[in-house]
Image 1 (cartoon, rainbow, N blue to C red):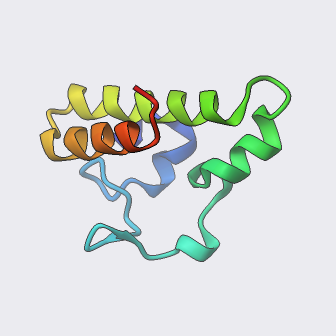
Image 2: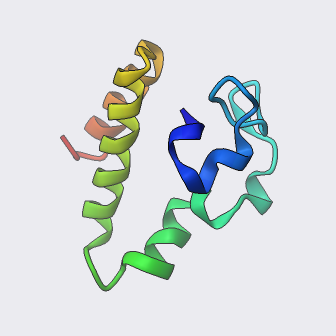
Image 3: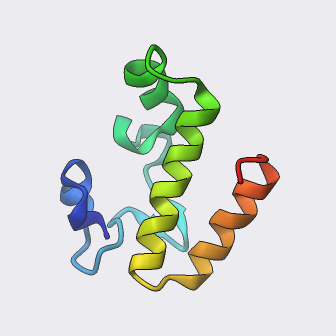
Length: 89
């Protein structure tokens, strides 16, 4: 999936997954790039364009769309649960 997002393509391990994802956890979480940090991206680029809930909803919807496109049912379920918890559906 990462190859489809130019800003993330350098992180693709060759099969569409981030090369820093180990046991479903980010190996560089504390030092992750800005593009991987939803809160920092909102503050840096989107706070004047939309409210934070809208930004988070749009990010989750984009992830859900990619998960559906690639048939990742486990991730689809997790995203839907997260959206329900945050009352974003």
